[in-house]
Image (tube, rainbow, N blue to C red):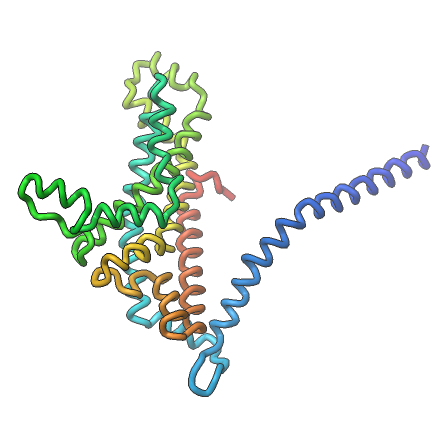
Length: 305
């Protein structure tokens, strides 16, 4: 009996080891891609940030580049501008996404799926294409807004001027990402048991009360996730201002956002080491913002210790 037990344990051990081997084999492609396309570039960028290029060549300067970047007025101004975009865009995107998700969850007719597709469609359009399209619409020469205002004898708003570019970019990003966030929240609402709604109606709750006291609390974890996605995306603001810069060179400078500043340093001013420092510093700021937000909202996001 002791021998049989030993054999059983031995067989289980072999099976377990074989299972571990197969698990590693199946995850190996992902691990290789993860290391090559994420870990290696991060390590390379960090190593580059520790050196400085000058007329004498490349010299090791340690963390002096980081001391420089956090006192660089161009970087700080771009970072402040991105934070302002974050403060404005994240609540707008979350509010619209939640509104559309609640609206679609209440619709029970055949137009609900069509409406959902129409709201989601802007996300399916590549960011560059969407920015180009809105750049055409904002144009004072041939854009439809110009024609519309001329019909009423009104001056065309300067969407691409220094005073109007902020709202123009907020509109482009909100138009493109709200549908994606709406789908996440709508999926969360679909997983809520409908018995809760029926119980609330029996207790005399109105549809507005059901939405505010049942639906929204039940999808709070998804709202936190959407906020984190929006926060990370906005802090890395790049595509839309880069595309519109050709039409608004006076409103969007090369250092308009930290990502644009890093690109200008690397390709326009031949400072790849300092550009790596700017990129790595921005990455650290994004991580810190995200971690702090998750810690503050861990009860709603399901991240309790």
